[in-house]
Amino acid sequence: MIEQSIAAMTWQSFYEELKGWQQGIAAILGFLALMAAALWNFRLNRRRDAHLRSEETSSIAAAIYGEIILLRKEAAQMARIVARRYADGASDLDKHFLEAHKFSEPTLYRALASKIGMLSPDLILAITEFHQHFQDARNGLPLLVASKDRPYVYSPLSFLRDVRDAVTGILPALRTIERLIAVTNPVDEELDLGMTDDVIENEEELMNAP
Image (cartoon, rainbow, N blue to C red):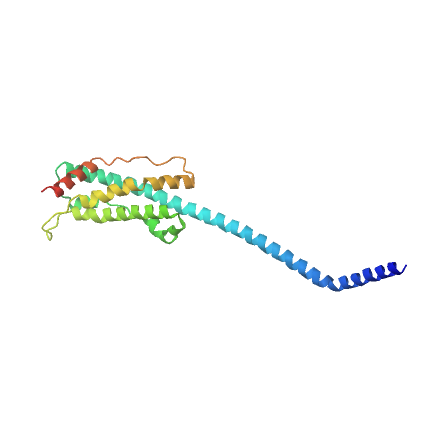
């Protein structure tokens, strides 16, 4: 009987003590629930942000890809025309040729320049190199026009090397972008550069001749 009374008092004391801790326990449980909810929301936000970044990256890659395809075809066509003229014996071009054959401006590349860093390093390097060669070719073409103020003429190498490297060097990067954005009709493996390589080889031989 005495043991039962002691046990009853013990449980009663424990119960009374527990009642005093109810608010504290409730606060702890509430805090843990808030922490769990915050962590879950953080995880969901990270997933959402990663998805949005992935979509933005794909959009940037698609825009750059589309513009490069057009510029690449334009560069190949220009290379064919210029190489043919030099292969046929033309020593230089004239202003009328430049007026009739103009390079397009890479407007999307310039507009998205601040976001290209979202792409992978290998794509950034390849895209940058393409546009550098393309710009050097644009700058080199007018140099082929004879000038009264200049007693010499530039070699077609100042144009043909860069335009060739722009056309051929970007192809692996285009393949990577095609996989990234799931392109169903890949670009042509090779573009016709006409006699570009022949003219380049001939000019290099002349430059290296003793």
